[in-house]
Image (cartoon, rainbow over the protein chains, first blue to last red):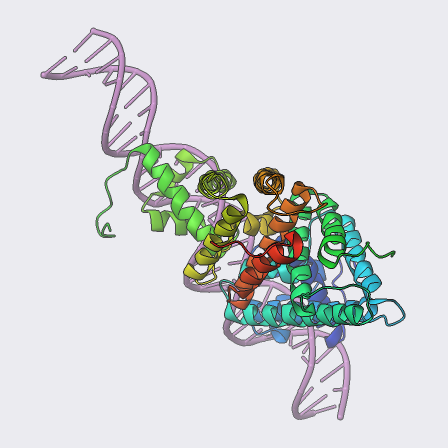
Length: 209
Length: 209
DNA sequence: GATAACTAGACGACTGGTCTAATATAAAAA
DNA sequence: TTTTTATATTAGACCAGTCGTCTAGTTATC
């Protein structure tokens, strides 16, 4: 870690921008967008103000970049969980949920889902944010729908409900479960939701992890 | 509406405090707690700064008062919907969900549930807020659980899942549904969740309203 | 050496929350 | 009825922090 007494040498451009986004993502996930000042991010990242405005045209531009970066990272995570064709689809979903539960516990209930958090905070006020968040939610829903369709087609569960609706139910319930987890400081709501989704909604035992 | 050119006569104390809470509740529901300054509330309520600090020891104190007031109003609403013993329990739940859908459309998708919003924004950062919000969520869950237990006892639906778990599933899903509704600017997610809850989770047709 | 990329951080306007002296009103006492 | 005291309420100063802009300066590249 660089000493605050000696200013770190300038990093390669891509690295500085990436670092701002990484640090910003972490702080915004915990404190929210409107309660996160640029200076806090700059201080934590060790980057001067002039650099910030060199890479981002405004705080809003920065926020959108944070969202895009998070979505890309989530896609990667979904690739390695829902996209793991070596596992049965319902096992993949189970593993995805388990890793989110582990993350919630690991951060001591102070983050949750950045997209959900920002959706709640900003969707009613900023059209650019709203549209970006909406498209991410829709993309996530499609991935879960594809996975659920595959499970149904394999005969892993039976349901008259189309997979897209089931995927949306899973997503909405999961967002609510992470909210209750944060507010109660317990992963119990997430665990309970996962169990209910498999057993009650899909009518199957919870898959082994 | 009072002219801004002439300062309004001082209102009785209780009335001033109530007005601050009413105005604050509305603005905080739309903009969030951290993006709502005291001055915006004072301006809208026509109340001077010194009065604010006479009634509230701090902005945080004010926020807690807003939450308590909202919870009390919600209890009243739950009394008149879930508590309407003249209607079958599942019809009551249906009506509660319908009124929330109507509210979301009426506010043009800019509010949602204040408790959910503040839970997402503040629960990870402020212990006083978190505890208050947690107790409200738990109380709401119990009311839905009681209603679902009554429905089950009447034979309105059959499920091996205990009503408390069903109530939590309903609540978490509903919070997620309102989030998706805000982000997509459509009540479709809320309608879809309601349908899925009755048909897939409870295994009954959606009750007539 | 010229140019492009990046940085340092001052600056200005504005907003934030808090606080306290001052004022207005109500109640009690003379 | 007047005066005094207590309570209720207000005015706005204060200080810290915000965001965004700007430009001189530094570093890296060609």
